[in-house]
Image 1: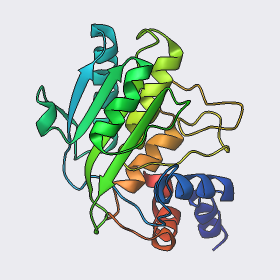
Image 2: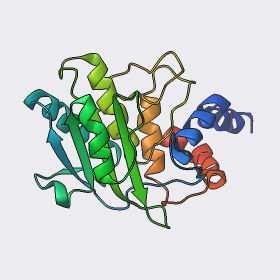
Image 3: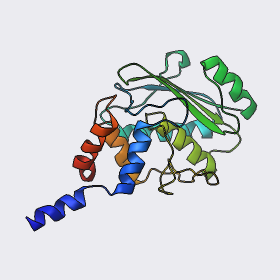
Image 4: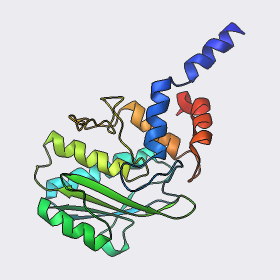
Length: 216
């Protein structure tokens, strides 16, 4: 019995981890007060519009790494923006406002990157637009972080928290975060999201997380 209780204690995420993951998976930074998950129910396609060869290659590399995290789904590349489920624009900062208007939302001033998602009544993502300023080169750690964050959030992990500095979702009033690779914490959060049905309520997600976290 003692050994069983110790195993259960190791398998259950701590309170701070649980708070971080549930916030990221069931809340949105902008535009929504939801308490349920939303995600892709099928493999989405991605079109990269604009940017240098290096910036485009960076986006493709991030898409490949995220495909591993959402397996058996994957992110496929397309050269036809009109047919893409995810449109990633890399352009001059002053051009992003106009692009946002054309795509049907409002660009939040002061941002170097922004994503906007649409989903149906069953929590299935239907379309995503990502806007990235082209101010930095592909070898700049800030652009690497920015693109990783926006592309990861476009999969349904839409909120920021101030709990884990190593997380791609970390942000405070004075620190926008800096990680350029997904830590184990974030990879597990993505796997958790894609192991439950779209529109799973936060209460149900908490129970699933407590059972599965160590196996993700």
